[in-house]
Length: 498
Image: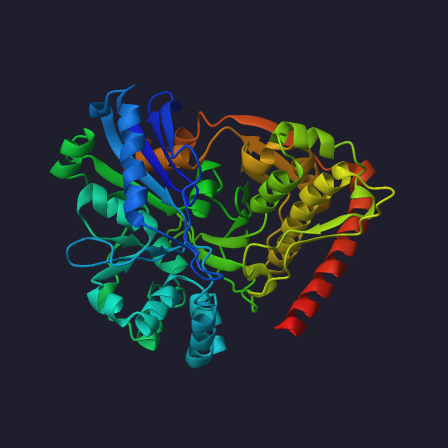
């Protein structure tokens, strides 16, 4: 028996096939071979065509079907880039391109709603500002694209769209509603007052299905198109960060997960619904949430992390792969001898109260410093941005002693993970998993092929544990405090320029 996991990213779409019995991946496919395009027709905008995602889902499934029989697929799970807006008409086709997670056009729309609804009500009922989330993006469409708004029958998240294409059924999850800022945590129901504030008809918002559990079944069209038997249950759905936590067996209060892809994320689970008064970190319903055992995910997102590392490689390291870059960076001393990098150059940062300091490299002495110092300072600056956000999470009661991550992207760098462990004082545990495999495990659990948490994660392999390095803690702490001062200066200067 097999479980199929689908991961809809903004860079690529990955599909993995899990053998339920052994818990091992038997096949996977990532498409396209290069990064998917993001349309940015204006500064701060970011859009993708949902039909492109579906095309790459189909390509990935077909490639797996060339190696393994898809007739043995017993369940399907989906994970997806969070906070995107997909609008479809009554014909089921997208009305416009998706406004994706890193698009910042709706920031002011959300700020206006915060004032209109009332700050206290937003924080007590939504645990967040309406901010730049999906509901605010839909309000932006209503305000600026009247024809597209009139043509919209339903709006939902990227994963909901792929679920619809596989099953023909419209739905979203309570977890999904919370990440759209359409969930009332205080009342335990849909936040109709947000839709009312924006003038969005309630009928545009889909009904909910469970995050873990049978949501719908594949239709005959999917069987004819892809070879997956009609009637196969879709039994798991989660945004990429709740799913990353799930894939790492981070399900209970006090547990922490992290990723370091294009953006960087720390995701902590708590049993107490709390709001950050400044909405620098955001609280959502976690996939393991039950009314009898509440679980909430506190999400720290930093846009400018992996993309900063990639930018440095493109512009300073022609012909070098990341292994060579990591080795060269490690030849510079801890603290990079005073060179400092602010990585916040990928749009407004929620952790900085929706401001952008801009990315910068400072402190260079032309007589002392080399490329190695810049490369080390880049990875240290990214680690410092994680520490900056984790300090905010500590204000909400989270105390990360252990951070779990997949051994991928930035966590492939020994320097980055050692720096992160030392500046946060937390052990870093690395596991052999990814988003698509996490979705496949979740589907097997949701469909009843796994009957417990222990069975679901019995085959999850821990690859390494990185402990804080006492010999570097003092110099890195001083370097971090200097970095924070530079960040404050950059934000002040950016505010003056505005």
